[in-house]
Length: 70
Image (cartoon, rainbow, N blue to C red; front, side, top):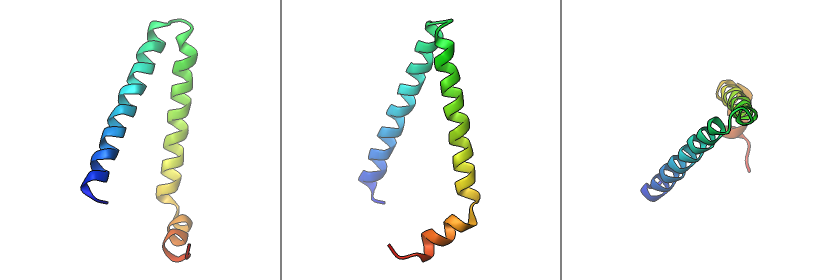
């Protein structure tokens, strides 16, 4: 990965982080109706952690990504 690609991903990551913070702040400001949005954020976060954990611990996925030709 070259330097420009790393810079691009860093900028995109920062923008996504700011967007999520803004969405959470908006959900808090819209209480009590914003609770639904907060619950959705929590659910998405839990599922994202689950998917990442499964991917990082899967030996089968590692085998196929290293040994199967595309």
